[in-house]
Length: 395
Image (cartoon, rainbow, N blue to C red; front, side, top):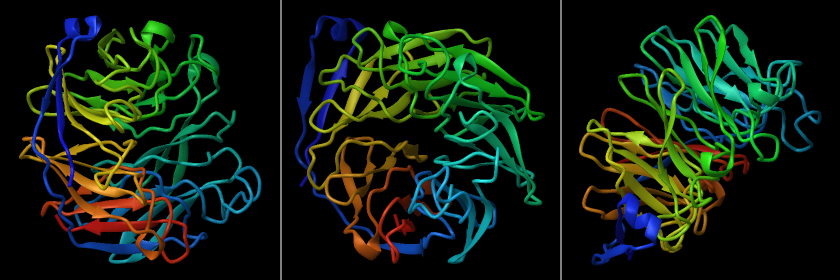
């Protein structure tokens, strides 16, 4: 059994600490059929921490943070089987498209690849590159690998751990967790733009404090080219923020988390609906983390507060939104992790609870939904060799 807590906040109510709480009846969870599509063994990848993407033929693409057999033990560490991979999964058969660890090409990707119409893949690595502060890479359809940008730290940014998004012209946008300016350790993070030919522009450097800082997720983009994201720290109450950046680089804080019932520490990004509402999660707050909605007028509604029970706990994975307004994602706890669905009426359903071992455990990435509504994702641990899985949940 799960319990739904719904709390509504206007900007003035948050500032004064006044909260209106509504409690609904508990709803039963439901298990859906889950199937392991692939178990990683090390040379083919280890610890997939990013979400998946699919092409028109249903082939799945993703990254693993370790594995691939290159660069082990240095600089990736003993027992990791290498510095990471980009892979393609077709009907249960995997093809490693690129193994990281060669000098300058980046290490430890934890992103979902971005796939363009020509079949090129783009992504980020947390480390490596010419200056060891991470990279933005391109893997062309003919499997040619190139580094579009190597971060240099400082105002250029460092540690891009996020997914990329693209505009209609093919420009790429992303975040770095560190670098930039401000009083955060190693810098407070940045938002950047990279043109298709590799020209990088710094759109915004976070300053920490009330400005926000430390970005652990990527961005959402609207039809006008405005970018939306979250900071883990900072804001008016030091609990993190939701922000908007215009194409000209003008930044607005849309919400500062209070550290109370509205949550704090948003590790994930946000997803946009057609009306301009934003949806995201907080790692902390409520009981064991929240799912929230933020309207264009700045009103935050807590749609669900995790209970640390069978419904999961402390979400770290991005949400996806279907045409009916249902939200889907994963949580890494409680237990071995879960896949969940949140309906527009606030009813949460656990679609699958992982049991560890060959079933997989510790999903930290979001999901991909196919045209039939089936969900695909990764676990960082478990599987036949304990090095992570790709799974499918029939929805």
